[in-house]
Image 1: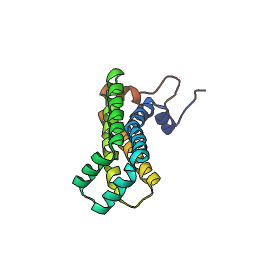
Image 2: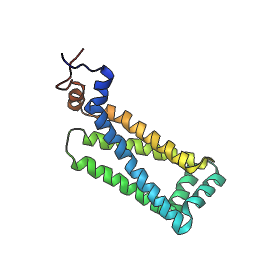
Image 3: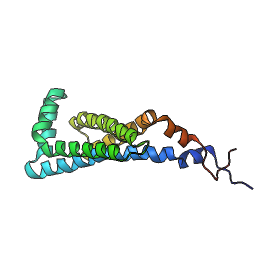
Length: 168
């Protein structure tokens, strides 16, 4: 008697979920390095504390957010840029069919997540909550973008049933 699987379990077990998780993971790399840089800024000159206070005092103004970020969080910016470079190199050097699409989706997710993170840091929310929301937004955006960016031949191979699974 052949083993049957529900459509949901086949979809979960498909390579599409694994490939989209690569984009999600890559979208968090620049954020993790930016947090590490912010920790360095905080330990060396209270950069994050000062930045958050200055941003709250100035209100939500994109120009002041950019100026305060550049001046008070240089290690955080360096970490974010280094993380973006790591994702770019990973996408360029891993020449498999979906790696460039994963890298592009990760960059898009990270861009949206970090932009939202700048706006969220002005609010009086706890820092762990802000970081969790920022990471969740970046991961969700990267997964969504990956579905739109992946090449057609990769999407077709992910949609085909795998050997050993019977179709209902």
